[in-house]
Image 1 (tube, one colour):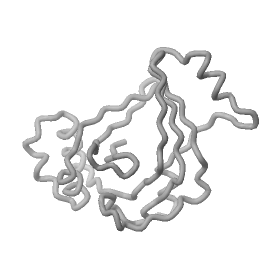
Image 2: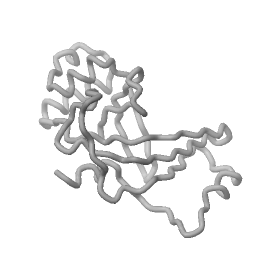
Image 3: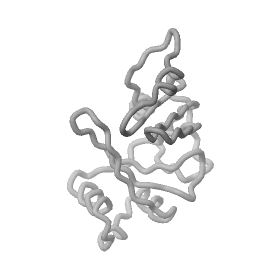
Length: 159
């Protein structure tokens, strides 16, 4: 899956990301994009990618052309991140998940978004080598269970 993202309204750091799974483990590659490059993608102008030497940009450009990929929706949410150095643990709380419905101009601050239907508040815990017991014990919440949830799928429910 490829996506363009930035967090909490801060467009000073925009990334093109590629998420992959191999043997059940998730990996992510990313490359920074300028505001102009991201806006060009939204507008369907891919000419700047032709000469870009980054392999992720080259792959994305190739797929845009060969698979006729187009932006589908906006997935907007607020993220509160927490880091724990041992094990490189990243704990995030994602909430107020919103969709742009059929709009894809995610850099437009006036773009109207609506709440994604039935989207919960999400607690995600990611780690590299191991999950320290202190974190494992802290995230064991009574009455809660672990499950998969796709913010993208929740935002595509309207079309």
